[in-house]
Structure formats: C-alpha cells, structure tokens
Length: 113
Length: 109
Image 1 (tube, rainbow over the protein chains, first blue to last red):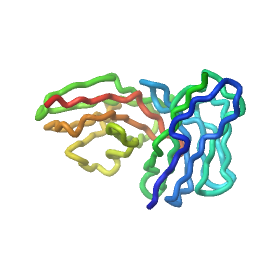
Image 2 (cartoon, rainbow over the protein chains, first blue to last red):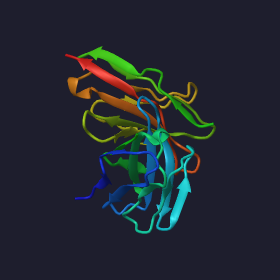
Image 3 (tube, helix red, strand yellow):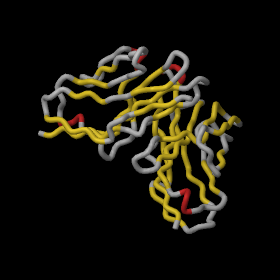
Image 4 (cartoon, helix red, strand yellow):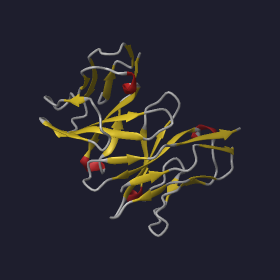
C-alpha cells in the first residue's frame, strides 16, 4: 500500500548524541519535505528535496542535515543533539499533479535530555 | 513576507451550529491556499484547496483577496468535525508551504 513512514515514532536521547530520523515513502513522489513543529506553533519547513541528490533548506534555520540518495528515502540527521532540538518532526511528500498536496507521515516526537 | 494567521487557537461550537475557522494570509502574488485537518490520533491530511472550489465533508472555503482571507465554513457542525485545522499557503517557488498555528475545533454534542 502506498504510504509514508517515519521511524522512530518517539525518541528520548541524551545531549550530544548523533541521531537519524528515518522517512520513507512508497508513493513514487519526487518531492519530499521535513517540517518541525513545537507544541501550539506552526509547522516550519526545515528541508525539502526535488528529487535524488537535490536538497534545499527551508525558511526555518536548522542544525540538522538531510540526504536524498534514493527517491523513496529522505533521512534527517542531527550530529549532536541538544535540548533545543526537542520537537515534533514531520516528513511529507507531494505530487505536483495535485498542486503538491502534502502527504504527511505520522511524525517523530524527539526529546533531548 | 509570506505568512498565515489563524487568530483562534481554540473554538467550540454546538452540534448543528454553523462554524467558521478564520485564516488570514500575507502574500504579494496570487495565492494558493489550502486547509489541512488532523483528527485525533491520525495524520495531518488535506481537507480542501481553494483552486478546486470544492466542498469536502460539508466544508467550504472562499478566497477573499480584498480581505486576504480564506475562512473555512460549515453550516451545521457535526461531532466528527472535532479536530485540529491548519490553514496553509503555497509560497513563491511552489516548493514551500507556510502553515498557520492551527485552530482546535471542538463540537459539543
């Protein structure tokens, strides 16, 4: 079934650790996105990708990095986690044929202690 | 600057009453606007887009360029409409979406 997956769903980790949030989609979409959302706040775009080997930063500055080696996979990495990185991270993909309707994954809730 | 404002964080209405969720935007060009919804324990999903001029689950939204608004309306609220609603604007490049802070709608039985 075509879907978008995120793992882990919840992660509690100590300061200074390296973490990778996984995002995969089986929809065949070229465009993928990472959003960050603090409680009660807007979703902020932190990274997006047009396709393989294409990544761009969003409006919200982020210390995270992303890669796009395969169409279906768009992982986000934090080299050294800090408490300020505590947030919800949402991955999405879109289909230009439907005005780039965003298909969201279930999200990863990250807590850095 | 491109921005979406949803002035109400919380909105409660009784079942069968009309409901309007407000959205105002700031954008210099011709905007593309969307409403997304997140039901309890479900993912964020598209509800409707202005360009389609559609009605989904009884909801409609009209783009008012003069007032820079894209309010979401439903004449008779149902309990299953209780959810978090986000207004979103597609930016200049077409690759960035700007979301509001969301409005949590509760329909009281």
